[in-house]
Image 1 (cartoon, rainbow, N blue to C red):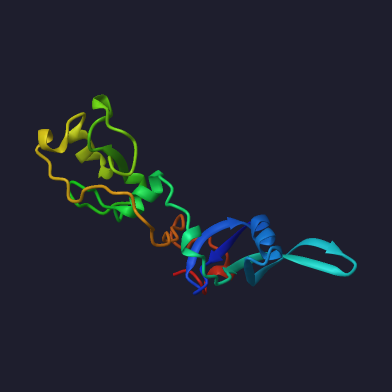
Image 2 (tube, one colour):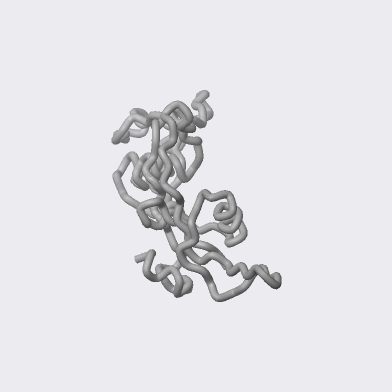
Length: 171
């Protein structure tokens, strides 16, 4: 059993374990929007149902406290819009790879400024060469992002198998 986490403006953000949703609710970081029928805690004066959908409370973080965007596979794909930076194909994350613009064999680092999203055919074509040597054009020079938009909720298998309690929130 999982919980759908919504952004403050009610857009789906991600799926979290129901236990985490309870902790966030107790800390006042989310509000419970919809509960499952299943009772997860029962005492004579207390009845607690598993949260099905929770919404983050709106807050205005101080600009100086904003954390830097962490380097990682999903964040690189988000930065590049899930598009191969050589051929421009837009694909699912499972069909994409990292590409080191300056190959690791030549001292290229695994960081924001040297990694781009790449489809498998383009990665196979480029191999351990630079884009110029491979005769390929890099669509956009990689840079460290200052921020990334919220990730789209990617539910496995469309809406089949999603709890009925989520149906008004995911499309």
